Amino acid sequence: MQLVVALAWLVVLAASYLALMRATLDYSRLETGRTASDRDEIYLVMHMGLLATALVLGFIVGKWLNGMGTAYATLFATFLAVFMVVAQLGSYELACAGHNGLIRHWVC
Image (cartoon, rainbow, N blue to C red; front, side, top):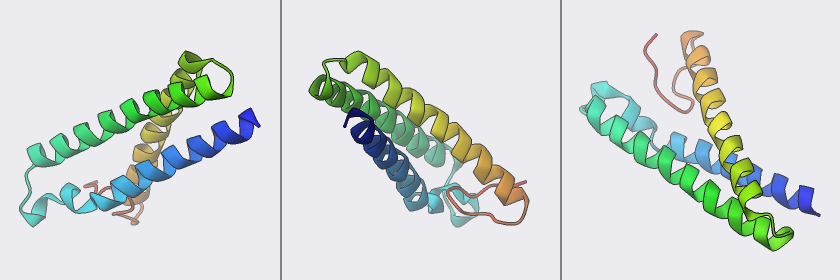
């Protein structure tokens, strides 16, 4: 039960990150009149907000499942941070191979 609940919430966190990145795709295109400062501010708020959400959600889920709130908070935040890095690196590599604009617009 604990494994299924934890994995389900990790999938929800990953999917919400991808959905938010996809929703803010226009901000990564600087030729549309937006500045790099605007883009960076949006990305900072989004990434820090999601990591804070992962910490709080992990703590709540951990306390509910078995009283290990801090362990689950660490697990959720670490998973999401690694997922964010892998998604960005993968997106960059795909963009340089001709598949730009999946979760961010890159210039190779």
